[in-house]
Length: 118
Length: 111
Image (cartoon, rainbow over all chains, first blue to last red; front, side):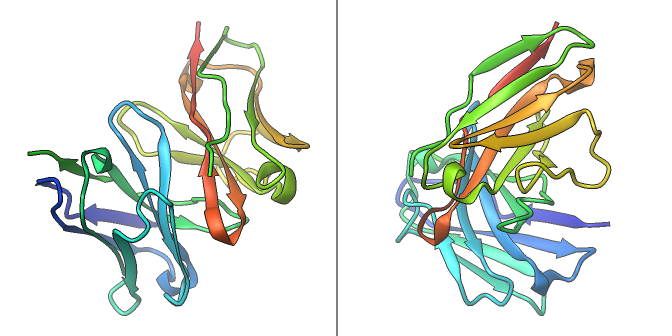
């Protein structure tokens, strides 16, 4: 059974930093690109960032480019997103998901909540 | 990258069919045609129901079908059931610069 478990969400002050983690199991992790998708309270889904299976290629939404960094550790089946210079508009539930250009976001975690507020 | 355009809300009666549209541009839906659709019930994670514009993952009901025409993708749900009441999001691949873009979501109410 595929499982994605996010962690690391918390309340952080504007301008602060945070690292989210997503632990994967039930599939060959290194063969899948992984993404973070967020959902602000009461709002729709927003793609944030994606990393290729071998970690060599990364993509970022314009809204987080230069502030967020995605990485992965295939030996630990984990994907991370390091978030810095956080803003109130980064407040959201952050989902980890497997991703493919042709297959879409196939598997999702349950999300971890990030709140940016003073 | 602008979001894809979906109707904010739609409704239908049990047994009816409804079609949710998703309008993009010639840089995403119209060029690549790689559209996926997601169903999200309240307080739940999204669930993939259509990928590659018209393919269903294993286990997804065949009442769900997808298509594209030009810059517009569509999700059709036939034989509406109460359990279909949810938010639906489309998503399109948009090339290596923008990667993907989501629609704003459609809240489906089953009357």
